[in-house]
Image (cartoon, rainbow over all chains, first blue to last red; front, side, top):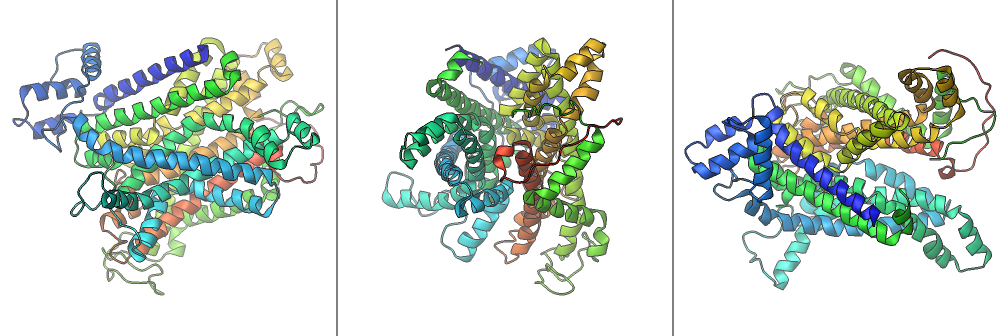
Length: 328
Length: 311
């Protein structure tokens, strides 16, 4: 319980740090970049919209930095992320709402698949130490885990999208012909469109899972209780899963926090390569069109999502591993 | 990582020995050998690009969209630039970023990690919290918005922002290794001698951690390559520099794949992958050297003699 409370405290601290970064960045940049943005839209914005942007970016304000900070936090806590300038007059929150589901689907499915497949391959590879499988697995995945995401995306797009024409090369469904809804054609098209981005992400993500799982598993296999299990004459698969893998997975779960950052950056780049209309693609569009409110909002959203996922992983670890409840 | 406490081992290895140990380790490990060879090739290319490519990377008066040929090894792009020259001359800027960011982040990581572990108390608390917060905030989106505000005018924005944000992972590793050293006898001896804390950190602790520091540098250099080329690829670098990521950016914005010029994107992409692989191979090799359980069984090293030398 204390462990969970401490993680909750850390969650709040990190959230605060992210909000503060978001507050400071435009103010620290030489010549507040938001000035030009607002000047461009002057006259088109209503006084209320103008005011919310001024609070977010610290423009035209006579308040000192501390007062600005308070009104900034207050505005964000009421859920007002400002107005998107490239999608004027929609508020940032509703613009984001249209993109988030694509990313959640893509990232969610690939993360779970990468975890299951990667852990599985890592377990078998460590168990058959020195076999042919184990001599191929580590070098191959050392290489794939060092590949830049966009390169994998580009190769997939080139081979399966452009050359073989097996899969569509952009968007999340056929924008012109499909009617979004719960019908077979639409679902099939969505899966078709998501296949290549998901595969590209999976290829780059799975290596880390395999290698860390293999390494912890090798350490676990040297433990006395594994030798004990062997001495009792238990079948191999039981030793592999119930004795070794079960204990090796937990440290792997704590590596989850680290991997999430990779998943997010991977998703942004892959969405860019495939023009997949998710949060990452939208973030880049916001940067290109200098839509700073949308950019800030997306950064906050991505950060909060990552932090929540880490918190969930922490709670899961606490539930699964009695040691975290006692020590540390 | 458990420290090997073989009884007569000298508490602190002199720098010369540490270096000899690194060389021997690199030669005896296949991953390390492959990584070193790759890296040396790239360094040579970066130092003498003019010897390998005769065309200028920015000259754009060749016939556009040529295929492979003797005069244009990788053909030309739709601007009429020679792609071979672009790739060869782009090496230097990528390596510069990798080494500058790698060294700077490792420096920060060593200072933060070791100071946290050795000073303990409030210092450890606050430095660790700072490290952990940076560790979980998604860095790539953060770098994107920094570059977005800064308009990505110079390579220095890239270098500074990556350095400022990406040291936390290795700082944490270094801290946990430094923690295992904290109660060792040679540090107790230094404390009894009345050495200043800064002296103990710089002269006593840091040299014992050489191999992990090298591994940290490799990790950080790999991050620097992936982050900076990704930022350049999405157009947040300086579009007028010659660098692999920028070449990729132009390839992407001119739809090179769709227009039958796949090598415009593939060549710089593969170079980034190869350079990244070089650092990753070296890194995993160091992991195996540091954690003997991971490497195949082989001959025991001959015992070393303790020596004296200044750092």
